[in-house]
Length: 281
Image (tube, rainbow, N blue to C red; front, top):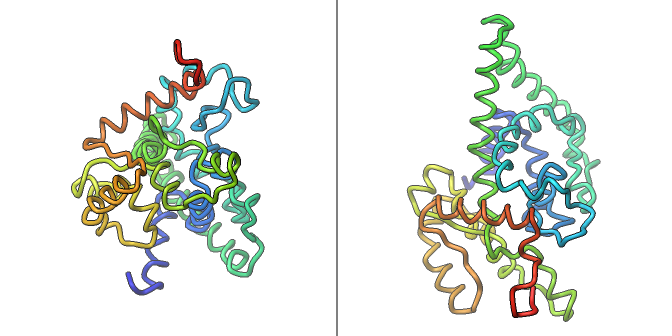
């Protein structure tokens, strides 16, 4: 909406599904500024040490032996995203740990004044979605199972779509590499495109709220997602003209296969192995 108050109100939808509006804002701002940076993008390391979105080289201290199998199990762990969000103690102080180290001032008046509101909203959510079902139906396994099913369904729906967005074969995992090598300034637009992917079209956009147009979202984060299907063809043409790698998958299952393949290779270190007869990694 053109009216900030409307957008502010709709933002509380985040709290209605068990997350937190203000923590999400801090995390998402940081993610957009440092997309796929393995030390600064909280989305890239928030799953560690259970599994790694980052493609660490062999011997890296963040790699674990069980990451070799993450291509097979990471989707099951994504099912616990709801639990890790609803019971996240960071809602108490609104000091998102992944963003705190990036310089965002967490003690400003805006944040401090909203801590009590955040806590009240979380208590309300837990009362309605956890306490009430047990109070009305008894503390039984079937009630617990229904709550767990709700959480897993919500987790997979959101977290798997999030995972597709930046973790796929040939995604740029180190946008600042060229700067460290040559000192050349980083093209922000290029880095946003080459760390993101887009799949499907308008129908996928309607079903996911525009999450499928991740390239367009990162280029124009303040634009309504309703416009993404209309600008996507032009964005692809401009990227082609300037030699920028634009990852587009006509169908979501193609993006899924690419993500599973990437997660397997990131876990095993396959991307760092020497290619036969080439001498290059």
